[in-house]
Image (tube, rainbow, N blue to C red; front, side, top):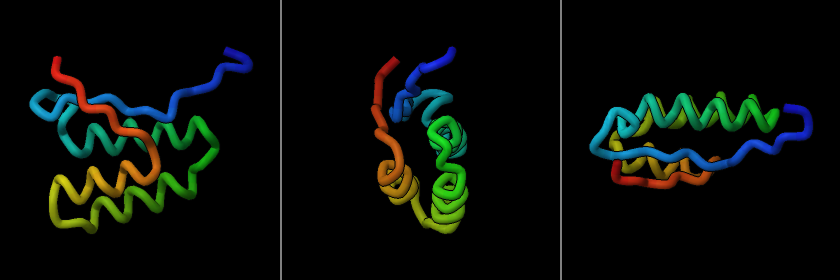
Length: 72
């Protein structure tokens, strides 16, 4: 929709399908692309793929978008 502002938030359930780090990464990249921040999206993905733990990956993603953990 014209003039629509996309949220900078990615909601995920650590114990569900949306808790998969690649699901979270894909949605975070989509948010950044909506904000015309494609270079940051690429940088974030590279950093996440080079990290060594789930929590480290979440920390990196949270530098770019707001992560909201929900229990569905």
